[in-house]
Length: 427
Image (cartoon, rainbow, N blue to C red; front, side):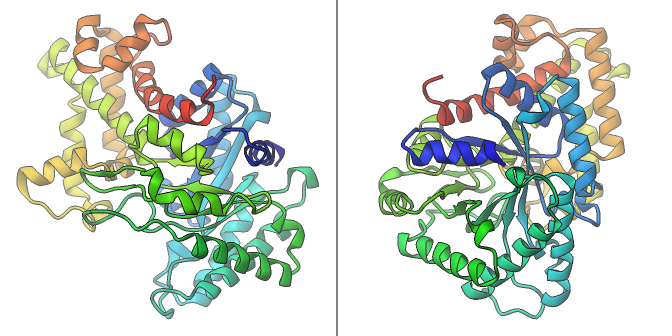
């Protein structure tokens, strides 16, 4: 996949360049990301699905890998995004969705999933076997993690049947805490030690080559480490470059590898720029963009209350809260408050578990009605300024219209601005 390889090679040659990886299955977020990439003429757009979102069993989106590819490609066609500049990735591909099973069964399912991702056209594969299965020790030994990653790489290589120049690229390693934001309160995170980071790379290299995957190793472009960034319900641990100096330098002599930084959501523009400078050249963002989506939808709900007669309102916010309380399975493990405090967590937690609920039929119908109401009664500029200042600025600058979908995408785009500035600081 030459687009990612070229970017990593540019970074390794000394250019301060990176890429934003948008990890979301929401159509408005994906459309916003593609429109943002077009507006800024970035070399390519990288959209990723996680193993929990998309797998052969449907994941929580109901999509198998081929479905997700077709879904994103339809959005790209609608906005005239060049297909040759669209890169799809699979995040945390391993036994994560099946850890309740014994390791042999979970890994067999993970092999099927990785092969399905590759056959569907995903070009960037994160091999993550760090999680313990039902009969595994906790934590899983490093060597077992690397052996399983090599096994999944073999499944991916065997599944690929296209032009060798378009063969998938790989990411190894994982971050701590778990993907999607910490479940507990945070104080300060331990930064991965440079020795540990390089030991992970060395072990994977050894095991890949022993498994006959030397060619695939040349397409390993990144390893995931913990640079000291994370977020929980209402706090963000910001990147402190002085704590990661040794880690940053450790990757410099390693051929064709950079770091991939997960949980960069809510980092400041300055922190994101420092991460790219320090060789965290792949910046993953997920809850950060869906949080912006929710902000915009709640703002449009507030505008509706100001402009639409009571009996005609969609009441999206109230409908969504009702559905969250009726179906707690996607948040009950993470939110432990009660009463009004729980309402705050359900809506405003930075971990944004509300993102799992947008496809719900009742919520989707309320959103559709909200958009129809605001298309019939477009929001006046003073209310946009009051409730959606970033979208108001985009409208005033001619970058967005008053259609509610455009207003939502402008809010998401404002979040992506910081990532683009970090990845292409001279644009």
